[in-house]
Image (tube, rainbow, N blue to C red; front, side, top):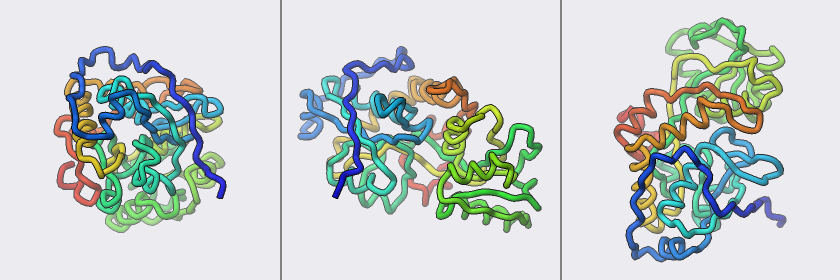
Length: 306
């Protein structure tokens, strides 16, 4: 069977200038065979996505992979294993879990919700993004609240938690609207772009990404109160607890010294390639709380720490 996995070698130097204020301690000697191999100059395979803007995506013909979580993974690896060689592997939602679980990829640096079911297969780092369910509308649209969707048309993705959250919110507030279901975010956005719906409801990072990749990103905005939230984190093998200890240690340092917030701002509130579009998505209060009080709580228990 033909493999759908693609590889690309990383450049030797990390170019993330956002970390200039960091003063990370060298990773301590470890009894972990995997960490020892990485620290001796072994290869670390970083799982990325081709089009999950701005979390993890490709520039050019997969010549370079960039994004908020891609850069986060690079910083983690460079800190715990400065001599390691980085290799990038394109993952899909369907193959991520098995490839992390069997060791083909060492990290998944795309956007994935931390859940109890997934924790049975892989380990999650500390929460480094909180996906909040909001909506995209045309720039000249006057809708600013989900309560204004009564009598409107809305697009959403089949099988997503965002749909369940939206319907629950509608039932609680006695709101009625027509929902047009789509198979992916690009199809759902096309419904909005063509004027067939008034709003497109999904996780804010996915909304920001699809807007950034559209023909006229300046013509749309993300609005609405947060009606649901899910913790997002990088994943790696759960077979070696020393890896989680090392990864979480670096992330805690990045949270404490402000580097995580600077990295977030680089990708969400400043112009990003290739179109130099500013997503204008300031850090939400829930993620700020996660930075002040780091945790790896799964989505099923997330409301208790929000």
